[in-house]
Image (cartoon, rainbow, N blue to C red; front, top):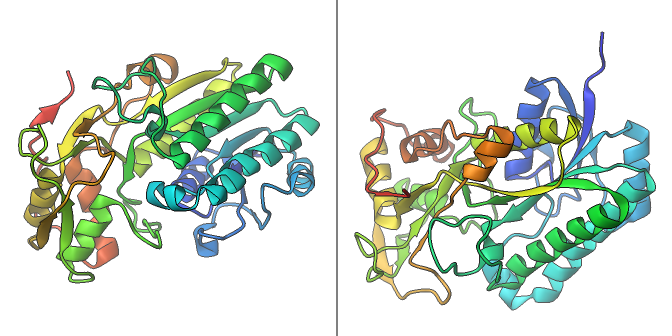
Length: 340
């Protein structure tokens, strides 16, 4: 029997990383999780071994790579709160950039030349046009976005100098949960709109704050691109196969290519769960662009990537049970704000 191909998953105890480990195992790979558990959950690591290692310790990472004979790296581990990065940039540069330095040093020592990087649409900052394509200028507005851009620059330099191939996947808004109910979104603190709105609907927190209702959008609230975590896991699987088959370095957007407003999210949760979301209008947050959604045509051309569960209804139906909410409507939601 052929042994499964070992893939190192940094941050495999986190939201997207754990969902990706589950998908990798289902497809015949062996996910080896590295996580220092500063924000991840050890009980989310179920499909392969957990190595409790900090990526900034390059020697310890190298030992893991050699012990498990890793063939490819998926790098999710990072601090990921935009607001926190503004308040404490030192933490973000130390953890995100320092972690990439340690990981690349270890990979280079092992002659491991395949890495998939969890980047972000935050590298674009406030884009001049939507939908956002990979040719849009990368002008981050936060230390978090800047650390992701620095890591992309490091990957490009390692490719040019050492032939270390990579795929940088620039996510838009990850959402949803494992449809089988094995995994869910567990951030502390929680800052993402959909889980915050579900918590408000379930009575697990106070009213939801809607930051601005006077934007130049169809209903006045901000519009964003939500992509199901299952589709993100699928994108990583496709990227792994691409690199294992000899693909060259590339940066790709992963998104639904659909814009959904804050009020559309609130309406959909109430309709699907039968529990209205209590909300109040708050002042705009500095730096929030009115509308931001992806053009993911390049990912389709390079990887064959297409979303499968990233309608707003699928996202809410899969996430709601994690908050004790049942779903009473299985019809697809009406989308009013679609990228052309």
